[in-house]
Image: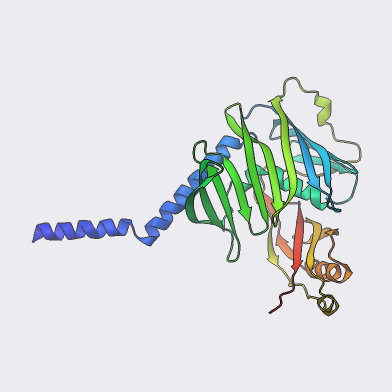
Amino acid sequence: MRRSLVLLVTFLLALASHSPAAEKKDKQAEGLALIERARELSDIRAPGSPPFRLEAKVEVLGPNGSWIDGTYSLLRLSSEKSREEINLPGYREVRVATGDKVWQVRNVRYMPLHVFQLREALQVQSRLKLEPKETIKKIRERRHKGSSEKCTTVKVNEWTERELCFDEATGAIVSEKSWKMAYEYSDFLEWRGKVLPRSVRAREEGQEVVRVKTVEIIDAEAPDLSQFEPPPGAAIKQGCDNPEPAEATETQEPVYPDRAKRAGVSGIVSIYAVIGLDGTLHNPTLVRTAGPDLDSSAMSAVSRWRYRPAMCGGKPVESETVIDVGYRLYYP
């Protein structure tokens, strides 16, 4: 009788170890391990990393639907000293970081949509971390282009998910997909113990909008320190290598204008803005239009939004964003 009781207890403990709660915990741990491994492989900006210079050719889809060629460069000596430059026809941006300050100069007062999309495509490391409210929902295996991959679905909030896929052989990230944007990473190279994608492509709702091709990454030996002097006319702001992103706390649904509905007008309105230290939006600027009625409606709604600002070391910092407001007509 005692032996049967012991066996029963052992059996119940075994069942408990495979309970939904235990499986959820295992899934979370596996997903976090996949993300952390990929981050360590690709993070050339980690503390203690050697100084480097990166040069890339970029292509962005312009407002009229044609491709625009440009260049991107990053000279980084440490987390406290770097110089970043984007050059496109009609657009130039330089950012110089020294200590905890960043000097930035542009030839326009806002960030065009295609430049924002380029910056998002370059931020591989921002994809390789979980925000406090994000959780691992599921993990699956797949075959893609002849390789084995592990994919983890991350629940962002009640309505949104994103999926990250990793090469099983190397652990490197190969793609990320959300409801609107998708990023693909390929043609990997090894540098200083890291595995980096030479090619990055971004798609918005299935349409390719950004292509990045790394030309070279080399050790930054004896750089010209004059490159780290503040550019003439630059604005200064608080710098932060890896801030917690801003989060909307108050939003307002836009009104679909009757005139636009009757005319069958739909589309996406995109608004650039700076999220200030107080969580309000500054310098809101239309960077994608869907017609005057929808533009006006979107701007009116978004101007009332409020945010918890981006945080760095427990202190608020300014951040830039592009807010997309979609208007779609549904017919029975």
